[in-house]
Figure 1 (cartoon, rainbow, N blue to C red):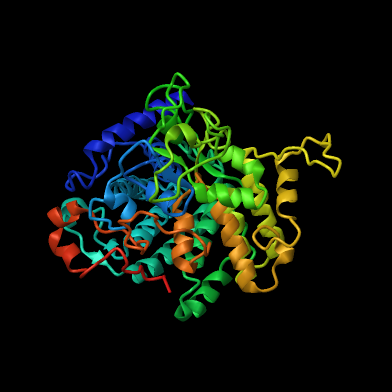
Figure 2: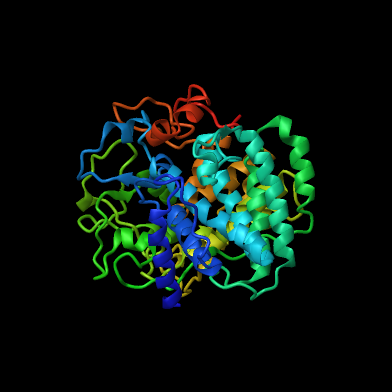
Length: 502
């Protein structure tokens, strides 16, 4: 496994020379093998989505959603705490996703060339996964003319809704291809080890997420009904879609989130991001001690869980919580692209809306359970009226059941809800919790779609605009190298909605 890792690292490093945003004239080398490119591509996707402390990527979403906060030991740039973002804000996301897309484009084309439907289907699916992320963040993007090198070195920006429609069709094709794939017929799959059944489940779940994103567009109801019908009888992701090439305890070769927080000597080094007080507040209010101690450690100087609110870095690091053992388990822990918990929450929402079959309550509770299991979250013994602790050692599954059965709690217990609106709010609240420090973009996407959780606090900074951005701005480099195309999109501001927002 280490050989696969090192080979993939070589391909990944070499890709820096082939990055389309550095030199659009050089496509992925035709002599590269699909297994090595696939290994590197999956690692890069996982690193992109599973490290909430990656400054140039998606840390902003974790901050805005209250999961993490800035350190109290630093003076933070006004742009970062005011919502007055610029073209340089999180600019690394745009280029790195297109770089990743180039790899998957190669895998898709190479699969077609050698007659391997597995590579072709994975390449097509993962391109759709990444393109959806780009549309969700930026709206109109280069699509039909992207990834073509000198053929289209200044690609036009396509309409975002049209891209979504095409992604739906391409996902259908990818699912059909993967259904015909033979398990074990490819190498380099560091996510599902060539298991075709798991890839089909993942593909179905990615398709479902594409439909869920459009839930608030009334004019898409007929489209969603028709597309959901294609998923009748489908199986969805029931394990974490996670990447592990054989991470090593060596600089640059550990799990990406681990390496951003803990060095190879085992010393905690992260002092720029700390716990988010909003997440701590919610956990305490709903007796979620199990996951709280998985997400964070108690502050060394106070023995208490403590964070900052976004925009207010008044509490120094010595009194705030570091990230905990549930999210930082080992240098060799898998990096998650999509968790099983997210899959079940997607299914719960779709079933509640009548789009797919299944019992929403059961799907919801399974989502909560999968979150506890992923974190290894166990609650302490329950104390009785005589203040004597019971002798039960609770498993993560048992701890989850106690949590989602809290009497009368509409933010944990399905039985406490009385209508669809409350059920959706419950699903999204617990999806927000389950994806804390796991995948920060999805809670941000749900918030833009539904304004849930409803009490997510805005920045407390005196410089705050008071309006959370609804999208990112195109990177400054796009205005420098592809000015005509990006300017043709028209005027864009941080509060310009992407097409699926209500």
